[in-house]
Figure 1: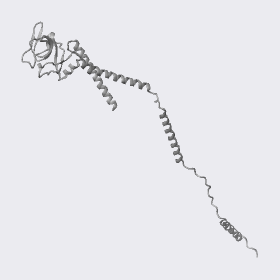
Figure 2: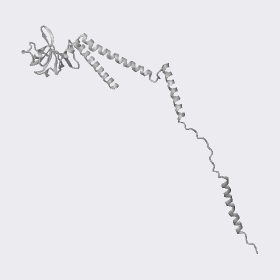
Figure 3: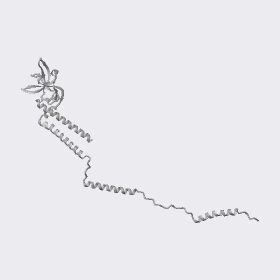
Figure 4: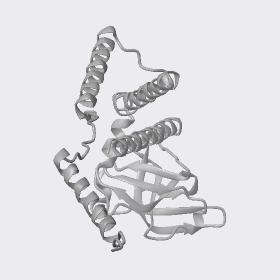
Length: 258
């Protein structure tokens, strides 16, 4: 369980770092190119006016793609381009309603989905920024706008990355310490040594006492009883043995001559 949690934590940290790096690239890229960030040909843009409602709302984040071939654009495509509004150069995202082509140039007549009339100025090829890829994140534009500020960049990028590197440094130090201590016996304090010695002594005494109780007692050597017959019985047996012999001798003697 602990290993699984550690793996999940590492994945989350790396995702935060990757996100922070991407935001950093986008912020610096947009700063160096007048507020337009380009990441591998894709351009995230924040909708700042309600001219494209209901397609876009203010604060939405849309993803546009860099236009490589201007002739691929068609009527009804949504494009982002530079234009002048009240004398200021700003980004504008509107839908193409007409294409004007000549021998040397191409221009696009655009209109917002929430506007009743076409835009006053056409969009020329040199003013195009990108074409909408039909990808939209509702409300995410406000987050991007906050991240572009100094406070947002410090809170959401600098602090998480600093915590990540501190955590990785802590893990590195712990790993180095564990490698150095590998193979070394842990040092015990004096009280712990005494306690273990007493436990071992008591265990040995208990084991020896148990062996004495379970050992069998030695058998005493007892002399075997010899069967002895009474003297009277022996005499009777002797008489019985001798009497027939005398009788036999008497019977066997030849008769005397008359």
